[in-house]
Length: 158
Image 1: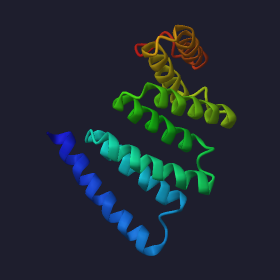
Image 2 (image 1 turned 90 degrees about the horizontal axis):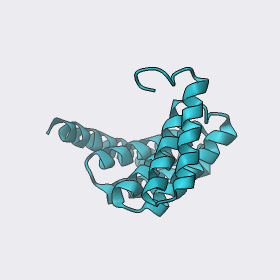
Image 3 (image 1 turned 90 degrees about the vertical axis):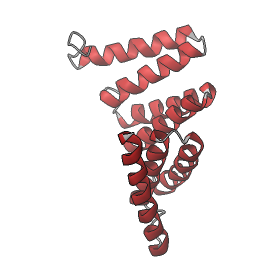
């Protein structure tokens, strides 16, 4: 199907870019970290959860070494890691990644944005799966509060 073929093509292009970055010694840079994240996202779209988690782990190492993890982009990486763990059925690892992402967005002052709201919904959903209804309610309430602050609570998507 079309989504798979475009993801396969993207993965090929990213693999080529990775080889170039390895040859030029620029894989362990912020841009290299983003490339590794994109490789993980492409693998996730192709349902290669193991490959996605490997790429995300490598990206996380680069993000940590370059200071990029403590940013909204780093929180996005952790949300992707959580989603991959969720896909693999590892709800504990998913929740852990989501909570670290939440802490980062909080420290950056970026929790009250679209990404923060979506992250809180993911936390709520995973807490529901884990039957931690109190934590799920708290996360969903925080997401609702963000929608209310942004004036999108009573819209078609709210």
